[in-house]
Length: 158
Image (cartoon, rainbow, N blue to C red):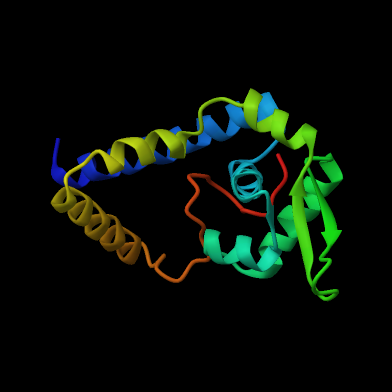
């Protein structure tokens, strides 16, 4: 097998793993991986603003607003007007949202994070450089993407 085919197979395995995990998560919790990550961010901080979530996840605020709307509709989070700034809205996790996190399978990206952080510094830098090069080769450097292993439209509901 030549190197080009080997590289394409590796890319396909990554895409397939994210697709399979997305299906597993949707089946177990009814959430997309990106919705699940928004829920995790809110749970980790206790309360977040849409702007804080968008900055942390590296996606636009309208994208986060759409994701929050879906989570509110599902009863996983709720909006609360800030007591200190009436223009600001806080996002809080509900008991249902917390149980969705607790009952969900181990997120694929959490597995990746654990293994990536166990790598030596030089290996991390090399891997980031290689992945950034692959994104550039696919003309994907400017695509709106969050640090969530997911396929498809990040605003999409499963």
